[in-house]
Amino acid sequence: MAHRNPLTQQELQLSGESASARENEARAAATPGTRRPGGRTARTRAAVRDAVLTGLTEHGYPGLTVEYVAEHSGVHKTTLYRRWGDVEGLVADALDLAGEDSWVPPDTGSLEGDLRALAREVVGSFTDPAVASSVSAMIAAAFQSERAATALRAYYTERFTRCEAIVERAVGRGELPAGAAVTATADDADRTDGADGADSATHVMGVMGAIDAGALVRSVSAPLFFRLFITREPVDDALADQAAAAALAAVHAGAFTTGRAGAAPASGTAT
Image (cartoon, rainbow, N blue to C red):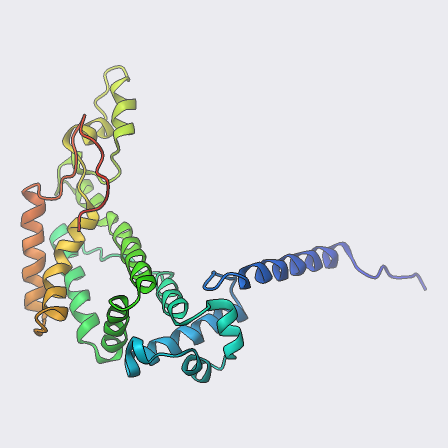
């Protein structure tokens, strides 16, 4: 009987991949809150995230402990301390994980419809008992932990980036000036200025300025968040529609146009 090689080429490859994965996990474990691959690790992260949200809802940030998360997630507290460091790390990673979802902004076929749907999503998130408590608890935690606040800003910044599609589609439909495309940059304008007979959309964008999609989306949600977290007033779809209408009027008035040719680039997104 011919002697069989201990490992086939495929098995060697898989063995190498497994070793590499173990090395990557070991490196990730050394840094609290570091993202790690899927599978069992993803399930562990999700279980920890759920326990963090439950704890924040039940006890608030001051009452949340690593021991509570260990008990409710089934993950040993030694593992929690090693991977997340402390309660701040747990809360920050829960927000980070929330930002890895597949959410996309509404696409209703019109800018007005998209803004209205976006505003109604905000209302729905804070009036649905199944999600309102945990979302509110996360936001409250950001007022008590700088690391949680940083994670919350990153979460919403990423959301605003996804919302650039709303402006891009509106430009494509002719609802906003062609020069308002969100992809415009000073470099684009400089490159096009040197082209023979340049009259491209990029050149027009540089001349007319770009719409700050993040500022537009903030203007939709700001009146609703003010009522929810400052004056503690109820919100509904009628208020959502009002907020969307105000944002629509503002964008058509040029309130969110951030720059023109020769102007210095904005240092950051308006808040």
